[in-house]
Image (cartoon, rainbow, N blue to C red):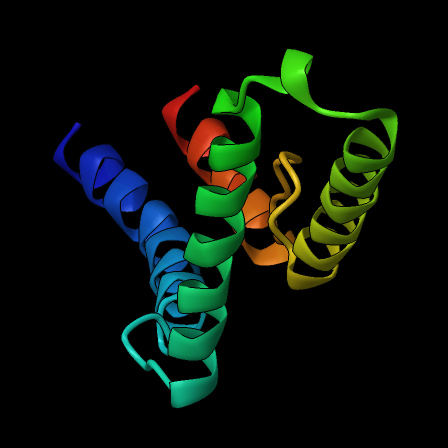
Length: 108
């Protein structure tokens, strides 16, 4: 009985080792911030604030030319936000997907 328990512990040890390696590689660069990221974050905040300003505007008093200009500005902002990766999609990296699958296998 005791040897069976030790065998189970030894069987799970490689799985936990592989899991730790994946976790270490996934989160190795998590704390690194660069000036490029900071600039992108500030530009993203500016875009979000401008979109909120446009949404809160009273557009009933605007002329059709002004409304068209606002639409074009919103399209440009949306395009820029999409290029920066600010679209509302959720993406999971391959490493994270592997970790999730391994955890599910271990738990179940």
